[in-house]
Length: 398
Ligand code: ADP
Image (cartoon, rainbow, N blue to C red; front, side):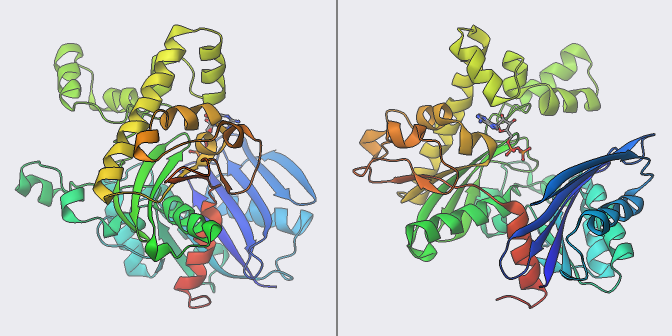
């Protein structure tokens, strides 16, 4: 039974999943973290159990040894489920990569070269790739880019009205992120509705810690809310989303905050956390229910922004067949779903209160039978999508 190993590597941690290449079942998953610190940590899950261990993990290559030890000690055996390829989540593919790509030395140089655009992510992704090449020198390694799905956006959607020569020289344009999830969810929505993907106009709302909306026209991304970086667009757990860029200029002049501080402020200390003190939607809604004014405002700002993008994409697409909610908040927060789409009956969007509240785990309809636009909750599965695309790039799957 062959398998695919999926790696999502950060600078001091990586997540992994072993997925059966045929049944697409998750055989094992885990997290290796605090790499390079005095005490590292690994957690390891299989359908049989959960294990954790603390030990020193000097670098990603050592982290791979720790992961492999988990497979030997707790199963499943890699001899019984030999990986046929390793799939890597790579955040930034720039304008160069628009599909899953077999990693050659030249591709690796190109991914490193894009580090300017994603300084926190691409170097960390490269660490993961190098460690995987060391651990599995004979296996094909495939890069699956977060930006790739959005490479079908037309220039009108991806171009900033910034002076053209500087934008071109520094590759400043909108790229979009969460592409793997938007692709997976838009395809899963079509499959669930038993409608051809090529006939559907869709809006996907990926609401996790990071959040983005995507307009999908017959299977192709034509617009998305994240831009040059994941900062643009929706309000997120800790990111501002859209904000007049002049606010940053003003802050710089007024406070003399440096680039790093400003980066930290808009990416890590703002969003619903910055407004209310709560980053997690569960805490935020609990506080809002209890009458906390700041929490109420944060929730209001959060759903207002979602609604604004839904409106924009409805018009850009010239009508929509399906709106899907996904990721941690989208899959679990009935209040966010209902408020994001409230009072839109006139536009053919009607959420059914009971369906929306019903606890359920799989893909499901939450709109009324009369709603012209079907509203769905579709659980995302980025690792599975990476595994599929990895097999596709190696020629093992159509
Ligand atoms: P990431 O973007 O890190 O992959 P997820 O997609 O897992 O994140 O989303 C994580 C977020 O989902 C949490 O921070 C929390 O706000 C939200 N969330 C998770 N479970 C629930 C729930 N039951 N109700 C509301 N929000 C939830």
